[in-house]
Image (cartoon, rainbow, N blue to C red; front, side, top):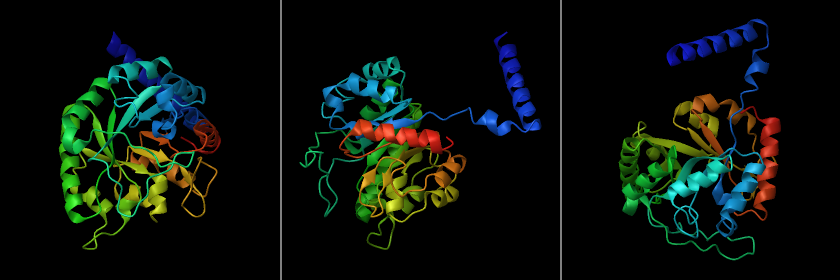
Amino acid sequence: MNFNRRKFLQSTGTLVLGSAVLSGKASSYLNIIKHPVGVQLFTFFNVIDADVKGTLTKVAAAGYKEVESAFSKKGGYYGLKPKEFKSLANNLGLSWKSHHVLGAPFKMPAGAKMPTTPDGKPMVIPPMRNLRDNMQQLVDEAAEGGVKYLVCANTPTENMDDLKASIAVLNKTGEAATKAGITFAYHNHDMEFKIISGGVIPYDMLLSETDPTHVKMELDLAWAIKAGKDPVDLFRQNPGRFPLWHVKDLDASRENILPVGSGTIDFKPIFAAASTAGMRSFFVEHDMPKDAFASINSSIQYISKNLNV
């Protein structure tokens, strides 16, 4: 009975779409199928730990449907266990899709300065677990929480020794994640596109020396563009490798992050290449904004009006 019902619904859907194509209304039919808009919770780093439920309530009210979590000053998942955080998000109408972890113990890149909070003070990074030292625990917790993706937020790539060690950790994590029923991915900044000793571009090695079966990519569009890369070219060169995206905007100097649609990035050709990328979820992100809620509201309004997602 269930099989027949499913076959009937599939056939009916095919007939409806076929009729739409024949009548010239396919585009209007397809345009009602909208991809859910997600948000990376690092956007709320300075406020979420004080009121996790209140923050997620405002995220849902703004129209977001998916969330990607990041590290918390409280530790764990904003002070909650994985299943507790999943339940809270789900009860507010949010799907917890992805979680960010570190690849190795945190350290600032050479010459880099700690980002500042809205009050102008250097951001304080709490102790965090990482894939090099706590890989299986992090994979197991992600599986317990029911997230679909576990993402390495960053990892050392400043020299060949660090890069090779990081690639080994990424491959090992990818295999463990696959066994746990999770998709593992790597998230870039701009530093992975800078040439290191030996004339190597780390991102090229990350793509070529990690197993594409187990290690996917979460492309941060703005960081790639800041580094002089065209995301569409990356998609064409590595089709299907980018199931996740981070979406933020940049000013003309490429130094300041802005809400989506208020800067200089042309998102339309990028989103037009979503199928080539293999994109399944994308997350709006704004690092250390003065007003996180104003930023996410502005971003989703632009996306809803201007991008066919």
